[in-house]
Image (tube, rainbow, N blue to C red; front, side, top):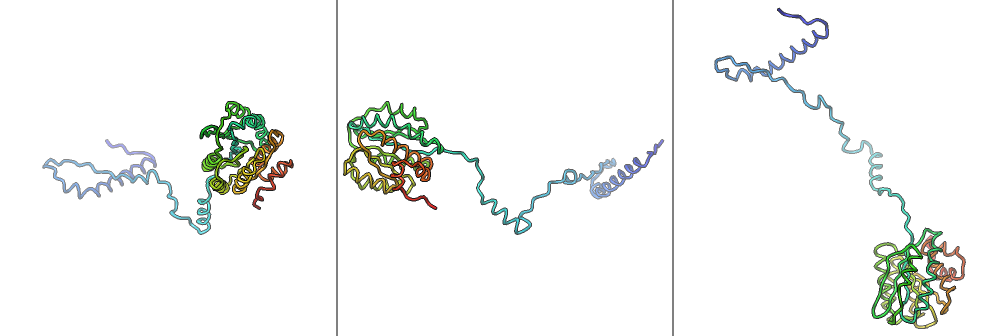
Length: 292
């Protein structure tokens, strides 16, 4: 007994199934005819065609290989040349505070230890300051601390240093500053001393290299040694910095100079000019005018 499917939907499905079967049977008739049945009439089931994957899961349309218009191409080319934006991160100014720590300098060292906090106070309003203490003493000894952003910590480091007899080593100070400037921008080098016992020409050459790197030397001379004054003035000038003498034992003069140079390092030429102190005006008059 046969059962006839009822309803339009089942009749349509049945018709479609018969068409698929007939099509597949026709496409495989030649292949089936070539197969031997061994005399038993072996039935080879038809191979129903499988639709390609794209028919079931259409692929995402591919992007065009090139922009569709000249204006779009120009925009994409310009956008590719713009560097990725990074969040702005403020870095305090970096400055080296180099002090002669030979035997005759102990009283001056102690004063510098007490006054160095003025640099941090002056720079606080202009973004802050990181100071590296450098010194030389004894027989060829030169040392430098890490960059420090705390006046109390720097004072503690200085308090642990005792001055020892020896010759000046300003060349090592300048060479060290060049190395630091090569790593990251160095906004200023401050040198405090009373003598120069080295040949002037090599020192001037190093100072010129610092000027090229944008690191001015501020040479503050205690006392009135004319030979030292001549060399220190040249070092300051060649590095595009400034020279200033101060009297022996004049804590107020050294304090004002340290305030001024810290203000310049952290805030630039404009901040130094606005400071308005005699020390600030003396330094600003020697510095090159800022670029327009």
